[in-house]
Image (cartoon, rainbow, N blue to C red; front, top):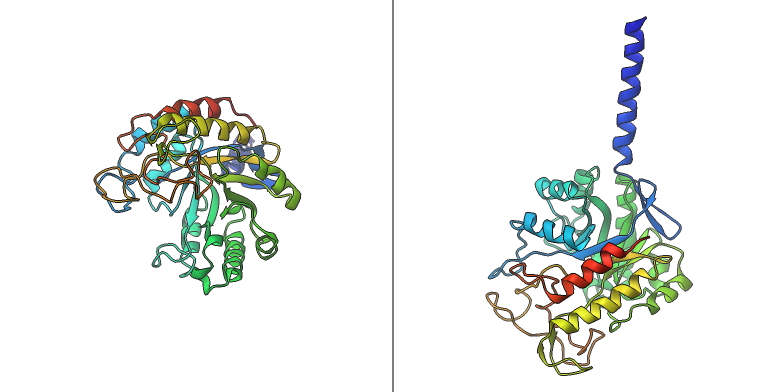
Amino acid sequence: MKLKNIFIFTLFVLATYSCNTKEEHLVKVFKRQILVNNTPYLIKGICYHPVPKGSPNKRDFSRLKEDIILMKEAGINTIRVYAPIDDINVLDQLVDANIKVIIGFGYDQNGFYDMASGSFINYVDKYKNHKAILLWELGNEYNYHPEWFDGDIKNWYNALNNAAALIHQKDPNHPVTTAHGDLPDSLALQLSPNIDVWGLNVYRWDNPGSIYKEWEAISDKPMYLSEAGGDSYMTITKAGYEKGENQKAQADANATILKNVFKNNHIGSGVTLFSFTDGWWKAGSYDKQDPGGWAPNSSGVPYDGSPNEEYWGIVDIDRNKKQTFDVVKKAYNEAKK
C-alpha cells in the first residue's frame, strides 16, 4: 500500500513539473497585451547588434557577460536582434539573466535562417522550447522597400503572412511580430492577419506619443515600439544643442521618448530602444567612429533630423556609459505595466 502511494505521489510530482516546465515557455496575446505565463509583459528593451571595432558588420558575443551586467543595471528585460542567435550558450546566458529575446528573421540572407529559402522555420523548430524566446520577428522596415519585392509591396505582405502562418503551425507558444516602418496602412493590416503583435519603428522627433491613438483607431492587437530613440551626434546646431558629439541631446531626447512610451502602456507593450552600443561599421572606416547619415532636417530623428548611424548606443563601443544610460535606467526601473 505504501509503495502504491509513493508511486502515485511520484507521478503527481512529475506531472506537476512537466506542467510548470511547459508553462515557463508560454507566451501569448490577450487583447492588447503580451502575456508571459499569463502575466502581462512590458518590454523594457534594447536593440542589440554587437559588432567590435574594425569589423564589417560581423556580430560578436564575446563581451556578452559584460553587456548583460550593464543591461541588468539599466533595467533591460528584452533584447531585439536583427538575425537569429544560433548559439545555445548565448541564449542560456540570457535566460540566466532573465532577459528575453525577440528573434529577427530577414527575407533574403543568403539562406541563413531566412524567409526566401524557408530555412527560418528550421530555427523556429530548433529553439521553440528555449526559455529565452519572447517573439519571432519577420522583417525590418520592409514596407519602405517595394523594390526588393518586384516593385509591389503586396508581395512582401503576402510573404509575411504566409511565414507567420507557418510559424503558428510549428510553434503555437510564441507570437509572431514584424518591425514595420511607422504606422501600417490598411493594406498592410488586411494582407497580414497572421501577425499577432505589431512592432513599429517610430522616429517622430522626441514625441512618439501620437502613434498610440493612431494605432488604437485601426487595430485591437498588441503593439510595441521596435525602434525609437536619438543619436549622440548633432550634424548642425539646432534646438539649443551644439554641433558635434552631443550626449546631452541624446539623453534629453530619450528621456522624453520613454516618458511618452510608458504613459501609453494601456495601448503599447513597451519599446526596444535603438540601440545598446555604438556601431562603428555603419559609416566610413571600421576602425574609427565616423559622423554620417542623411542630410540635416531630412528625417524625424531628434534634434537635427539626421541619423548619425554610428552614435546610437546607450554605451559607446568600449562599453563606457553615455549620458543616456542613466536616463534609460531611471525610466526602465520605474516603468510598470
